[in-house]
Length: 143
Image (cartoon, rainbow, N blue to C red):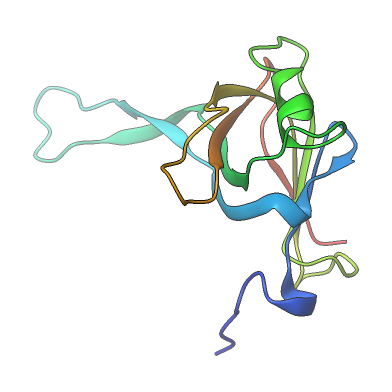
């Protein structure tokens, strides 16, 4: 069994949004690929029956905040609530995409964005949740 230490040296995530590389500001990432559960339990059943419904994907990224040009705030704020969104790419490391180094891509918009979140003496971070724009879902590539 391989154990994967994420975010260290060559194992660092590659994160881009709208063509801007934000990797050096990422603190954490969570990719959630999900389907709604649709209950199709009929009369006389002795247990619940469910089938997959609509996709409900999301990506949550926590960044160290930066208000410089072409950095976190400018890039994300430009697409907040956008119906057309931009391409979000997350790769498990910056090397070549493969079966052991997958890449996830989605055309999405930030649906939640906290531009400021810090206390005195702490690093300013921002948590951002991206949702796919209409008709899109997260895709996983291994080549």
